[in-house]
Amino acid sequence: MNKIITIGREFGSGGRELGRKLSEILKFAYYDREIISEISKRTSLSEKYIQNIAEHKPVIPFPIHTGRTFWAVVPDFGQSVQSEQHNIIREVSEKSDCVIVGRGADYILKELNPFRIFVYSDDDSKIKRCRENQSHDYEKGSELSEKELAKRISQINKSRADYYEFYTGLKWGDKANYDLCVNTTKINPEKFAEIIAEIFLSKC
Amino acid sequence: MNKIITIGREFGSGGRELGRKLSEILKFAYYDREIISEISKRTSLSEKYIQNIAEHKPVIPFPIHTGRTFWAVVPDFGQSVQSEQHNIIREVSEKSDCVIVGRGADYILKELNPFRIFVYSDDDSKIKRCRENQSHDYEKGSELSEKELAKRISQINKSRADYYEFYTGLKWGDKANYDLCVNTTKINPEKFAEIIAEIFLSKC
Image 1: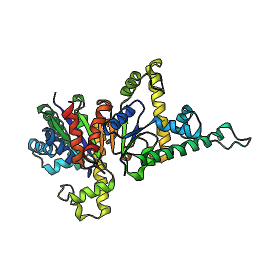
Image 2 (image 1 turned 180 degrees about the horizontal axis):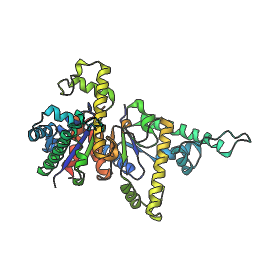
Image 3 (image 1 turned 90 degrees about the vertical axis):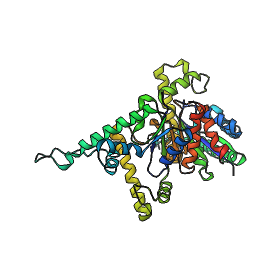
Image 4 (image 1 turned 120 degrees about the horizontal axis):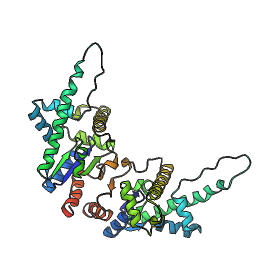
């Protein structure tokens, strides 16, 4: 059976950096935005649109008696994106050893016993990392004030929590759902990746 | 400045084993029950009595107008035990590099920037570990039914949570208060100790 590492992560905590470094050391396949690109190919929807759907819980339309709203149509796209995401995550887990970042992969693959990591950090650390990483596609951190950036980070994390809870019924970031929770406030993500790699290099 | 590692741990999760192994690998001083023994020497109270006080939040007496109850006297002992525990933890942290298990040391020593680990595991794993560790001084696991043992473990952990919250104002086991949270359900505590030791051997 392939070795699977899943990484849940607070936005701004360096989970992606940790995951990528870990995959490089272990020579495992790495999946993060690659999943979005693949969904885009399969559904002909834009990556940006998919990114938005794939990390948000669906908008449930109210049954308005005067007719169906525009939003009533959206969950159909949402469902097909979710379904493709689910399929792709299962497919890549069957292909080779891999690191999968985000997207509830820990839950989707739970029968395959993945090693589940959650990456987090304190708020100041998240703001600092976002400022340093100005090319990030979510946010041009440098254009936002400290307060605006903190609010944006908090919104993204709230959205991730809602998404995870909606699709899994579990609390996002609850340590009971992970094998290792890593605080990147004091020790950088790449350093943690080297340490965590030892678990796989020496044991599995 | 000395390197300090503090270990919070759910009862039954192997936190003590992890801490001891970590101290052996790193050649750090190790403090756990040693602190109780030292308080006993300084206060002339029995170790068993101190163990009970030192890990429970105090019983606050109601102001009964007919007179002071027996319990009204107990917090005085409790206070001196807490105070000695606090002093000893600070003293040992100044002596040498060390691993300190439990007793809110992460909070007491927070200005010294300790590396804060929390060790936990799922309920079945805790029961299994308690059964295997029959000589543990809290509990002769083998004499209890599965249900009784689960209840006892839960009570001890509730008591640890209450104690920590009472003295720190923080939530026990909340990952935000730790640098690393380690789930010993799938990977044994000694193995985790070897991995964690790498952080100190290679960086600090």
